[in-house]
Length: 362
Ligand code: NAD
Ligand code: DAU
Image 1: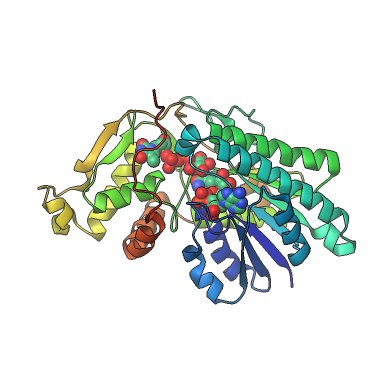
Image 2: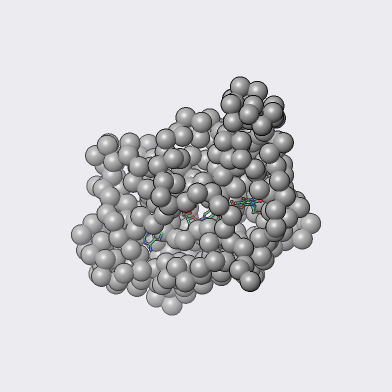
């Protein structure tokens, strides 16, 4: 039985990936290794753990001893590295944790992967892979036209994207220098179940339901290329099982939207699922339309204007295609949040109050 290690598996994409694995890799053992920061929650894995196929270990990827013990104990065939500090706004306020986890943590995983892989024999050595989950933000910001391809030069603008870029360079170097069989993926903005409510879509859904302002940064015309999280999970599995060592794959849904368009779509979806006219929080304010809650607030420092992914390589070489349109993905997402308000309350409790993050203090 193959063992698959998923670092950061208690976070947004990692937990969705664990559920993806449970249905698509039915004979493997899954080990989640996660520090359980504010963004990680075992509650997100509850049903997965109940299957008996998922083993949870609390640990830090930047701690070499813990990482060594993980490899020694579980002897993985595949490592998927999702573990990261992932929120741009938090990286503006406190970049240290980003350097430690994203750069130092990836380094420790690479060091241990190399040591472990060198000790493997036969088929196990040939099959071993380390997949590093990265972001389109490493490429910087686009003008009105064009898209990021696998050969676009790196130009990260936030401490978050700079640390992700640093990690990507290390991953690449471990292949070039030591031959470690790595695969690298750079994906655009994900949305879907289990996303921590500091990110645009869940924050807006929860604020709207509570009749709170919907804070749009700047003029609301920044563009992101949105991908439903399950489609990202499928791309990662294809990259791991069909991709070539040393290769990089860009992943994106070709769903370019301004932030105002995203907020408009989610307000319309909410209106269908739970009309504002029936929501006491909105009625109290005399509002019959969630869109009336939009307010424009001070822009994010260093706010990238536009991202767009050219995903033609993964489509062509690995046969990956996204299955969700933005409308079907958003409908499923709004429905999920409406059905999981208890999860939303518990992950925020004593942890985060949906306050504005990432403004520079004078
Ligand atoms: P997330 O913040 O929801 O989850 C991160 C997880 O990593 C949490 O469970 C956290 O507890 C864990 N973690 C943090 N530091 C750790 C450490 N030192 N050791 C072990 N675990 C640690 O993030 P996400 O949105 O699920 O993103 C997952 C990965 O995908 C990240 O590497 C991110 O850069 C990348 N990515 C995210 C998106 C997106 O839109 N969310 C898009 C492209 C790429
Ligand atoms: O592109 C991939 C990246 O997408 C990932 O690497 C990151 O981990 C992930 O967090 C995400 O980064 P963004 O900065 O694009 O996501 P965020 O949800 O923070 O913001 C999306 C857009 O919405 C961005 O232009 C900022 C804006 N925004 C965000 C928040 C939280 C607002 O206008 N208001 C808000 O309250």
